[in-house]
Image (cartoon, rainbow, N blue to C red; front, side):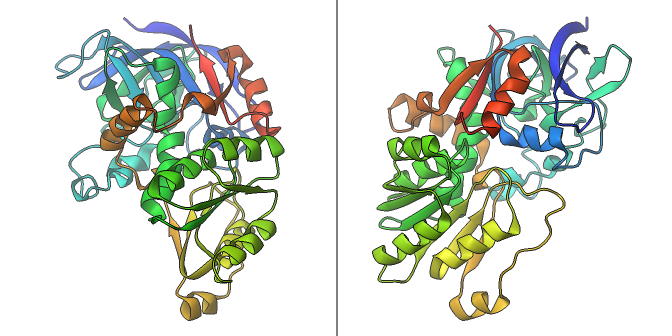
Length: 374
């Protein structure tokens, strides 16, 4: 039978989440219904509620980071049982498309549905509001709900002893940031790396750069609290501006520039990317990870800089990660004390506090806010 749930819903792109009663369907084949334990408050959800990212369907159940316990399993759904612990991947993996079969499951063909909010095969919806309207799910997940209903293509089973209060971080922030440094930037031992913006994504780019062997990691953020956190998480230096970081990188590299610069600011502009490109050496890489508003459509860079200095801008989604391989790997790193997760969680909120939580994000008070449902 369908069940009732409370969820944070985007009804209009007006900057406010509405916490409403919703109805959640029974799972169909290859679907599971999950009682949520924890959800992460990522800036990407804020892009949707403010209108920086256009939505083709409203209303939308927000949230794309989370962990929970399977409450119901769809018919003929192999490999899942009630009581299983699960973490979500915000990009599904079909395992059949060109990208999945090329080791690039972050580009899975099913990813085209992540903002539509519907299912991958029949484009139908699983949530209904009290007024009868069909609600989508951000990234086909909708983790800002007491219960959610997801495809098994978006779910990764965790061990029975997994800490669900913490491991939700692996579903987006850690993989995206860590992978931006390790995979997308191709950081090498001895590198000088600049990370521009050290919130929930950038702080993990700092961790990734450290794991990849960078000897100098320059964190850039205008907020002192975030700079201090970056130094605790592996950054060797911290600066309030890119100008300061770029000038310091010159002193470390015989006036050549940083080897890598990773752009992880909350709201990206073309000028941010231009600053990153200017800061890197000949043959260097500037990685663009952060999300820009749909209205941002230009980068003020001379094409000659790319030709003459052989520089590269590398876009990345999910940090080039393959979540079904990388999430278990990062869980083991956390358990071994090699990857810091607990330190990333700044404040815990209830679902009813969601708007305050996002105001705290805008005010620079959080590295990562967490909603607990228990």
